[in-house]
Length: 150
Image (cartoon, rainbow, N blue to C red; front, side, top):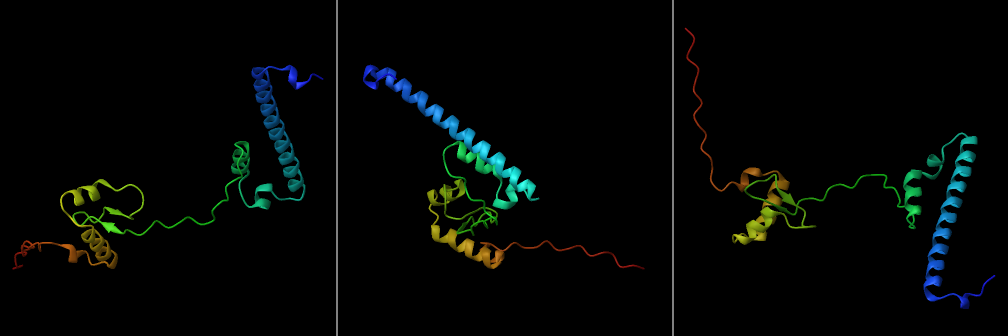
């Protein structure tokens, strides 16, 4: 065996890269082999390995290939956040206050609108009083009556 002192710095770096790649390759092969054996054992007992572990093996395998632990699966989906701000001009537009500010929010503030008004619009819409946001009442057109039957 050759002494490492005999190698130049570029040769040592190349050797280090080759060793790292070989280690990753062997780890991956070992995991794949072990996974195959575990699946076979589970199948002999009449259950799948995924059922036994309670998560999908594709997620586990892909995460471990990247060198990180597998993410835990979430059993229930998260509910969307409630609207903290709502556009009084269009109640369909809302924002939870998290993430990037929507364009309508930026425009409202740029035009001199207050954030408190947007919060108020959200609280009124949450309570179901949509009519409370109307600035001007809209007059209803008279409904034509049907001619009397003779």
